[in-house]
Amino acid sequence: MWVQRVIELTGWEPLGISVDWAAIEGELGVPLPADYKELYEAFGGGVFSDSLYFLGRDEGPAFDFLTQWRVSLSVDQDNNLGSHCAVEPYAIYAPGGKGLVEWGSTEWADEYFWLIDAQRPGEYLVLARSNDVGAWHQYDISTSEFLYRVLADADFQPFGIAQYDLGTVFRPGSGDPFDGQPL
Image (cartoon, rainbow, N blue to C red; front, top):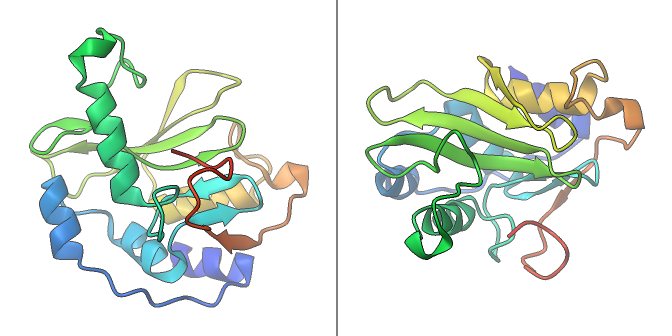
């Protein structure tokens, strides 16, 4: 239902990307949310409303979900960087453990994650933080509902971007990691 609402909101023609979910989920050690998989297959990776970066599948690393997760996990586990973690008080999810996996962000440094616990597969709380506010916000809603509310609900604060009248267009990722996008 919410995936279809995002598709209708953006006027997007679903791509129907074929995905080897067994390989992706095997690497993660947990299944991903069903609605995220639908979004991933419909959109790939790219930018909503010229400001919200959605990690899905891309030819380059900029919008590729697994590439971004691998980089975050590597940095989080690098002892040479000290004990500071970019997602405190959490950690980046490591297979078999509990932690955060990023699936989106904005040009304003808002970040969108799932809190994944390998001992509780199928539970996907959305955790988000705004650069302006800094505190973590927890949502017990689906990825696609969260995405829809960010794009369409100006009152969905502090994350709603509809108030800025940016439109609701989706642009696929370019594959170029040096175009000012995430990585």
